[in-house]
Image (cartoon, rainbow, N blue to C red; front, side, top):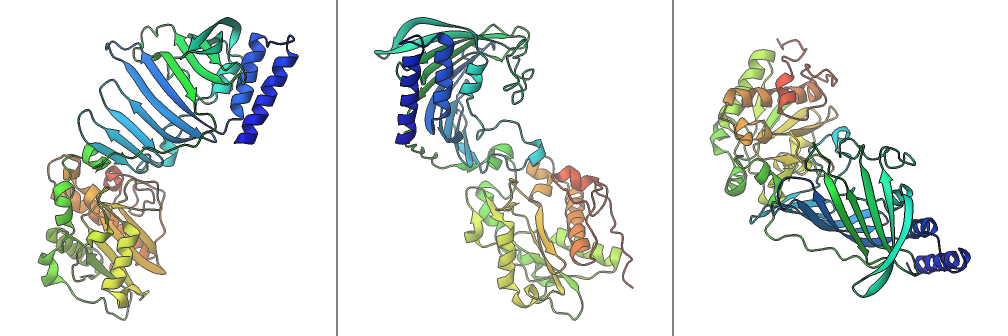
Length: 454
């Protein structure tokens, strides 16, 4: 850090001594500022954004800390009183006067090819790019800030006639109402290093598109200083509680859903013994007894396949993430090994867990998973009915729809692990390989392309 700062100071001094004797021209000063800024390893930024919305208070304020051009943390305050705090990889959202909710990581549940172009971990201020777009650069009278004198410059950015494509390659100009608008930029630069201390960007009103940014102020500080991460909020709730406030098996119901479903004991067995390849269902937590019975009856009637229900068990509380109110699917599969060790290590036993508790995969970027599965050589799987239930989304109960969704995913896993069927890219296929939401399950068609057992 010290070496970089010393090199930057040397460059700045050399530029000052060679340009016009003892002073840089406005264009040279801005270029020196951009060059010096590009060598900085860490800095912090305060910002104030105003829009042309109709509301009296339409400003967004915040602060961001960067290390090697990556966001270390950021905080934003919005006109409605809500706040966001980003401490990678977690995004905390605080409702006005209410609790804080966490998304961990922020982009889970969104396919990678559908991620927004910018997110809380992608808030880089492209200072060199902005200065590269400036024209009509002029030096203004120096203006002190907090009794410190700074060099002051002004320039213009015309997005109808940009000097290069550097910013238009990364910003959708039309989406932000930038196309056809002119921005006036003012810079306050340090007298010796030419590093920016403050930048103000003003734009003419957007006219017919309210809500677009018309005024932005950025303050730069703590160049090449250690970054201290803020403390996350206390008593954080999972994002799902805000997104799905009426979902079962959350909040005060969460712990209860982990308990053993004793109503299934009468139709269960304590082992998955057998000499041939077989399918055994492992109920974990408060699984619906009616759902399990209907699934067993369906496979026997449709395929002549006997699905054995094993002794129901609880989901251990120490496996559950109390903040997310979820359980890692792979960890729950490993727990099945402690319940039925003989069957777990028997390649002829297809073990499929079924739970009403919400699942996630710790090695995945998705916020939740319907289930996870192994391979025919390691035939284990786990299924959650949590996201299959219409009640999770605040809709009326619909047992037929829940059964249909659960059956389709279970059939797919049986197709893969028991029948050895290949996955399919066809969204109508019962072996569809890209299930991302309930609608994908609804679009899949049954039955599996296999002959019933005789």
